Length: 101
Length: 228
Image (cartoon, rainbow over all chains, first blue to last red; front, side, top):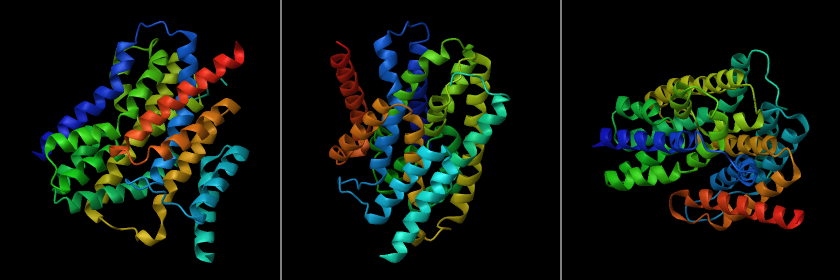
């Protein structure tokens, strides 16, 4: 039963990834849709961040160390464009503030 | 921006590597979930090549461990992964001038990190795009295969009090900033954050998909009013 669940989930997640690539292979995208698609990457990343910081009940699971860590990471990412530096800035701030308070 | 990098395959691998750092502790979380669900290690690990999606795999095994039915566990896992449909739509224009085999293979490695890399570094030249995409995708794939195997064998190797899981939202904030190269995109991201928070109690993280679609629609309406 577990093997079946894995296979079904694998087939389903592959289908979700492949579906529109194949379905829209010859579709002439109107400009309004192309503009809409430009917003997908920033909004999905934003939604994932909040989703990772909330409990399944919808409570925010982030205190001062998390919030300041994310702010520093965002600032580092914007100024350097380097994800490793953003990780160092974010985790460093998170650990530092966590150790202080 | 739309220039083809030199040696796109190498670039893809190098760009994927730092993005794997937060996936490392997640591979150990995955190992713990498999162990707690009482699933044999090899069977749990087999979900890595079959599904290739960390959050989807963890959701599936968490629910199986809680005694959910196959139908319930599979559908919950697929709702968690529903955002991949948005990636499929978004990349469809770039896959139009690609050969058929790449559509089949590329879809298989279309995960969060590979998607966002393809958006941050848009490459118009079809061969360079394909090499970059596949190289980033299979670098991530190889590392995920190795470290989920290590994860199911070792289990809880990283003490939870270190808080290394926080590396995941930190990386995604960094990716969000990289993907927001215009002010309206940053506004869209802020809007999506607020809406996701309001919808956070929806089951199986369905709020992600709704928040994204709603914020994209709001941005389009705002743009129309602004330009008319």
